[in-house]
Image (cartoon, rainbow, N blue to C red; front, side, top):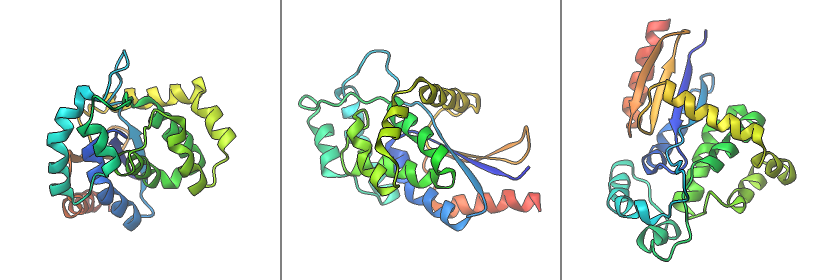
Length: 214
């Protein structure tokens, strides 16, 4: 089998947002490498939970992501983090995961790009990913028909696909995000990244795995 790179991420993961430039560059420089993006279901509360539950942690952590990864969190996003008692956000990983499943079916070659766009929408632009309208600008960007997209966004079929991805990520024994694995045979996986990893380290590890296959 041809090697497959699995990028396990979550739309709400700030460290994944920091990792976005790295995985985008990997995808751009390896156009023949199949990359499958899997949503991990990082935020799946049984009862709606306000952003205030995690805002304190994010307030402390986002600066580390900026320092390590060189990304910037947007003012509209940080408003919700710094004013959690005024925010109407109830984060949940389900809807962006469903959106990714829909998108992957339409543009399988552009999974990384779309996943990174979802993160940009949240962490830079401050869009609420539990709100249907948070996706409309991406439908325009990718020329996706809105009626079809929103019908699928609320369908059981694509919800099941999203939850299948959550369980697959668990089966891969991924416990944190971002995580990158390369599958080289039916049963053999190489762990390339657990947590934020620099481009140079990623490239070195991918090259090392590829060298064992040639």
